View 1 (cartoon, rainbow, N blue to C red):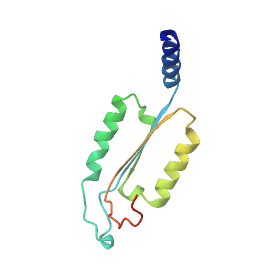
View 2 (cartoon, one colour):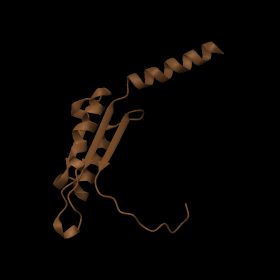
View 3 (cartoon, rainbow, N blue to C red):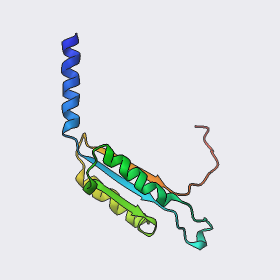
View 4 (cartoon, rainbow, N blue to C red):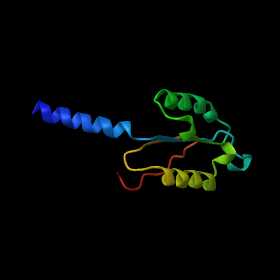
Length: 110
């Protein structure tokens, strides 16, 4: 039984050795005045998250940043499509968002 567990652990370890790591970091802190949202410090999260990913052996070339004006619907959609075109099964993907959220009424008692 111990041999089977050891073989399985080795197989899973090898699988992660071949996995690429990708990340998409989205940070919106400067909102247009017409939205009514005040400026927040979301952009301060970017270097912290990026450094954490680099410490986890993510390659800088595989980390995409969308900050403020870049983080539009079209920009986020394009970044996600680019990510989808690169990744393979077993790759590791991290998507981080910093920005305002909005509470809505829960109408389904989840």
